[in-house]
Length: 589
Ligand code: H79
Image (cartoon, rainbow, N blue to C red):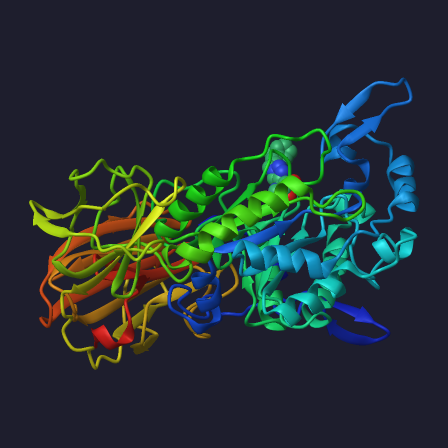
């Protein structure tokens, strides 16, 4: 959607000393696709999907203020990582603070050790927050920890080395919004700033070993156009193909980046069409604030994590090291508490996801990892009072034990599912986990499909002979503004139709999900399942059909693109099928 003059910028070239230099090597052309894989199943994201729990670290020059700024008139203004802006600290004063920033207690070994003991599998640290201050010796400018402070050490190097040594993944937060770079304040000069941003990102992804995650923020800057977001996404993908990138590289839409970023909130259930990670503070602030003692309890934090994992998300839990670089003692204590719970009950979280075959009960949360369910019980019942599990698909339970004690849990079929009779008292007041070995429905053999027949027209009305006819193994396209289905298809005003046969592996309801821009129609077995023909920006649509394993169903998917961005993806899920692109094996031309 949205026609954009930005297409005219497709080839941005400048003359440097008489030679033509392409400013942004990642610029797309007709035929280019931003969607390189299926984030729900690809090896690139498999670590991210299994990890479930990471440590966010907000540490920067703002930490030196300890959350307070004393004005000339003696009044005090409180804030945290936004203190420069929210307390209107003049730049000379904010910059002068750097001369006193000497966080000698920063101990990467201890930080990574704390994360590991907490059961966290990755750390994401602020390399540069909105104040623009780089926590590494960037060559791009002198607004950095090594140029301006007596401390001089490269925080990112220390953390990267230690993370590698202790076997934990590393990610960098990077703010697009920048209050300090003069060109970032100006529409006319913004591209010069983007050039420096790209140079800094190149440093980050090339100088510190593998970067598992790039966590963009501050994309609400008015200069951050859709075209710039697409461009940056292609740029970092080109430099670091295996890095998982959050959706704030664009505009936090379902088509932006690799995953969604709910902030200070937890979605009520599985999220359609994207991976996701809830980021949250452990108290009330991201950066260190000495006055913020509003710490969440270990129970709240742990149940947050359990619920997030059971909804298929990740939990990125923040700590804010103090002005000396130390993680506040209460934060460390809360993390140790979570780690103690995970040391016993980790399988309910790590590698686990949406249960699918049961609905979430009122007494806790259930997650699934292959043929194991983990029921995290918040309200342990009185003796001989059952916990009921409602099944959405047939399965048997062959064994049920309490993880903490090894005690057997009697199970009886009951109504629409099973009753569990946990013995004795709750072994853990936070959550007691019952591990259930299950035998689910046997799927039909994996199909031998090769994909669908795809036809593309250079008009948005399916008129005339298709310009391109080919086999598409999956329907997984994000052409953005500057890409299109094929070099011979224009980036605007085209239409596409995929036809063939769909071969489900389970007899159960299947929910089809499309992500489309501008219009979409899906038929299964000749019946309309999804119809959204009002031209729209990136949109998720769903429709559910009960299918029989092993049968082949006619499938037709139609898509039109009028202008601006273009996207078309086709996913499915069922009680026994985690959300994913419809795989090639189950599609026949
Ligand atoms: O880094 C942490 C926060 O500093 C940052 N994101 C987390 C991870 C963050 N803080 N606030 N926000 C994100 C949301 C900010 C929204 C607003 Fe605005 C910015 C409200 C007012 C200024 C955007 C720009 C809406 C109006 C102007």
